[in-house]
Length: 384
Image 1 (spheres, helix red, strand yellow):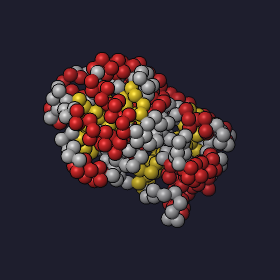
Image 2 (cartoon, rainbow, N blue to C red; image 1 turned 180 degrees about the horizontal axis):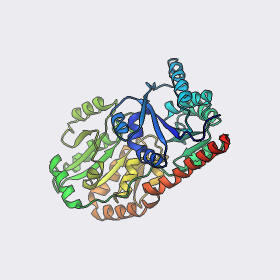
Image 3 (tube, helix red, strand yellow; image 1 turned 120 degrees about the vertical axis):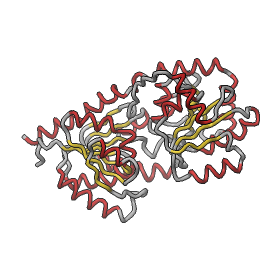
């Protein structure tokens, strides 16, 4: 039996950076409640920030594929660590880490398991093999999960059919902070100077990891057509990823290097969004994208693909436009409309701002704290 007074909890994700970028506010809220917080993940540039915030880190070299035989070694290591640390509860994130980690948690008899699904790999319109592979796994793993948190409505409806040990919860995303922008005009002026952008430029911003799912090719191919009529258009792409070299090479081959700028990993996303005219995300699938949540908070019009998660945040022709995945003509037509209509930009932006309240960080933290409180109550009742 676990000691109910042992106030230790853990967060698990494939990489530390996921926890640093998306979950630090929740980690801090637990620390304020008196919990010692641990983290499990692969080493990257997010680890240092977690350590600076008082998190005890356990390095786990998670694989990209949950079916690799080498995961048995990882499971064994996590079982040993979970048993030694005797956590009150463990909160899992990201697909591979959550599968491998929940197996370890089951064997180690972790008393309460929380899993946030940041977008199931199976979804409406997904290839059939996604459903055949990932649906049975998530359905099975749900039996070893006490609280399953979903962050969009489509996933919530699917998860209702899973047999979790306690309950399924819907919480809209990871939340975004209400921003005190200060002198926005000076910020915009400074950022434009940094990137050589003038008042005549129309600026599109895309914040996303450079991988196949984020579908940057739809944006690059659209830009190739847009610059013919609008040579002053600029597209800023913030993010790193495995496809960076390929995407940069394609951009150069299309002679778009003056119109498309790859910015790498950035910590000034707020300032970049203030400077841009439109925020875009043309992913093939999403959970509930934080970049678009930030765009709502900053009252920015959005162009996104009509996929789960993104369509939760974008109401077509109200605060932005939804285009279909790989619909090049529709994407070009949409951006062209925005370039040509300042009035559309203003109205769409105002509507984005009005939709942002329920996604504010403090509101989401309150909902997540209810989950943690319920988990803690369960542990306390078991220890009596």
